[in-house]
Image (cartoon, rainbow, N blue to C red; front, side, top):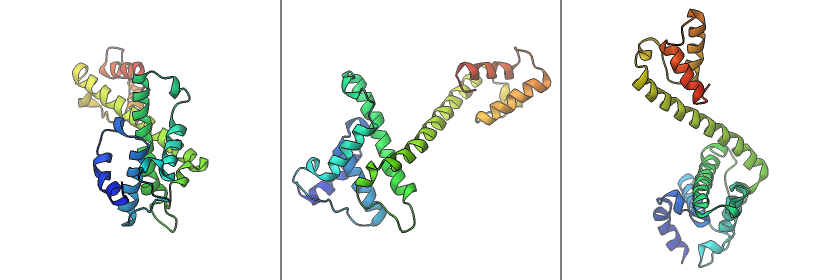
Amino acid sequence: MTPDEFYNKIPDWISQDKDRWNHITLMAYFCHKYEEKNGSRFRLVRWKSDPGKGKESADFAKLFSIFSPDNYKGLSGDEKRESRVLVNKKIYNYINWMFDYKFRSGDRSVTGTRIFLLPAVINEFERMYSNYLIKKSRDNSISILIGWCKANTPDIFDRQQLEDIDDLNLMIKYVETYNLSNKDSECLVLLKAKEMGII
């Protein structure tokens, strides 16, 4: 495979579901983001006819190993597939974070794949990604709670705003201020939120 053939295949590879991605697909996505950001193709260190045998591909294989759970090799086939999708999504977000956030402006820029393996950069991303996942999980839980309210306590929307956790905290104060009974919709909603672990 020539470099031109590799670049021509990138759109097909990166459009596949994340459960089909591997270190080569991750490298291809990196090359796609690099070209998108800089307007020129990333020049691989040493091109070999197999894109899986280059330095950049090896860097993404190492990164996959870093982000994989410690017991990855001992997981069952289904567990490995599930874990692989989560790790691929994480690295996909890591690549986006590097290009779109970490090095989005200024003199510094992503010039190679080695920077993805730096512990300080990984730690910075891990903090932000963890916060993102917590917020996403909370937002998803709030959506589920809103659905439950529509089915079980629809009158709550006549009196209360319910869009995020801050609204639930205000509802707690409302219940305390007006000394509502356990049968009032606000109390039922707060009880459900506690059962779901939102508050």
